[in-house]
Image (cartoon, rainbow, N blue to C red; front, side, top):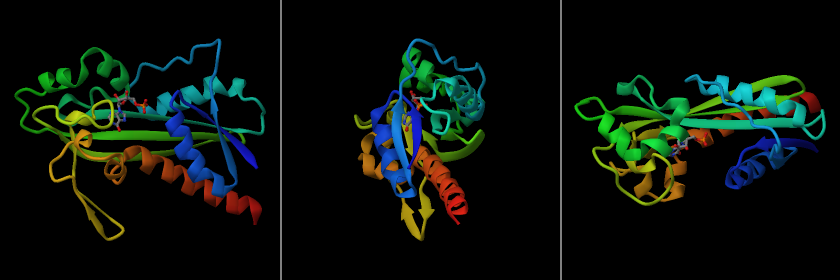
Length: 206
Ligand code: IMP
């Protein structure tokens, strides 16, 4: 069984990936790189950030044959030219949800999206998958569920596998995690990567 080292500070993300990758023959472990700081490049493209993290962490892989995975996400507001994007964690800490609402004052178009990029280094090749969730920035923050910018984000209704999903105007912070997951940018990115892996896996075992 191949080991996939998931570099993240979030054990919840590791559990989700374990659940999805185990049936494909991968054993997912959390990689915590100690003693060095992984530097995030100053740019607004999540894929560049993810690729840079993979490159920096590669020398710290316990075994050369193992795979390495990272996942990055952010909120991109159309009317703010994609801000806060790759800077979302920092902007959440500094301006918070209320800061984004202030910046949106006077904007009639409130369209925005969450983006996630999952990237995997396997046998010296990088595989990348993106997930997107379109929606709008609410007029005010509501709800206590979730994290980050969930209280100000209302997902757009979607159709998937013949099913219609909508929060009926509620923010991500006003719905349960299982409802949020139906729209999740993160889930879409990870699923895309797992699909890619299953084709590689079946190709290598055939
Ligand atoms: P990360 O790369 O998954 O750690 O996400 C970076 C930042 O983007 C977080 O600190 C949040 O501010 C924001 N973010 C990413 N995904 C979500 C989400 O699903 N809900 C709310 N905020 C999110």
